[in-house]
Amino acid sequence: MFDLFKRTLPEGSPASNGQKKGWSERLTSGLAKSRETFTGVFGSAFGRKPLDDETLDALETALIGADVGMPATVHLLDDLNTRWKRAGGEGDPKAMLKACLLDLLAPLEKPLVVTEARPFVIMLAGVNGAGKTTSIGKLAKHFQAQGLSVLLAAGDTFRAAAREQLTVWGERNAVAVIAQDGGDPGAVMFDAIAAAKARGIDVVLADTAGRLPTQINLMDEIRKVRRVIQKAQPSAPHETLLVLDANTGQNGLAQVTAFDDALALTGLVMTKLDGSAKGGVVAAIAKQHPIPLRFIGVGEGVDDLKPFVAADFVDALVG
Image 1 (cartoon, helix red, strand yellow):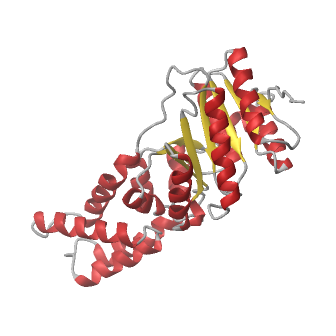
Image 2: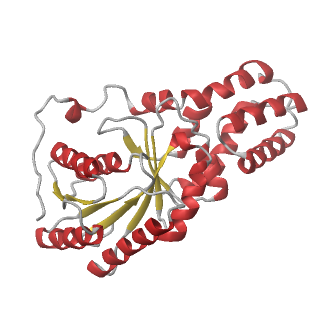
């Protein structure tokens, strides 16, 4: 049997109020560790000094320390050096680096747009612990703020806590959750889409079980889940998002490659930019696997997930 959960949290509760800090302040705080790696370079060694070998070496160390990765680091240093020479060895190196980063990250800034397809099905995947289920709850709030009705499909039938967690988010956002005790995740997806059609729901957020890209049998299973969604609605899934934990660093690139091969990803969601993460991995992704970064998350609050804006991210990353 499928269970329906629908309840609204009382006014004034933490979940309904979200965080008190503004988004810009939360993002700046979340990228503090990454930004610290640049402070010494720009605060002392750089200043207005020329880009000599010593300062370039210091910046290379800072970029790698921020998890930018070698390919993106080489790209950024070459671009910065070119801009510096073009300016005749004058100007603000920090501002130039920010311009280099902005050019690199700008292609990732492609907000998710809900088309006229109904229901609009968004399939989410990721490894265990990436923050996938929590992100679904936050996305539900995001789409509700746009005046769209939402239904959650608890397709992670292997982990009981996942269903319970999704149920809590359903209660917080006052949306329906289609769930099942054990069984086939594809069946949950099929019935969730059928329920959404019957109820005139705008958006279906489809959770899937966490898995490592090296688990071949589970990767085959998630391909099957995608096929079931397509059977239930031929044009679906309309978006396939991979949720990445910012703390995984360069390992996130391997996840992007594997899940894209399996599911043809249309976008990414990066979570846990909470001060301990090295946010430079976004630059690594932009250089090596530039799939749109639809949303970034900086905390556990319901409002702590926002569309990725490259300029805001660069400001918070470099300072």
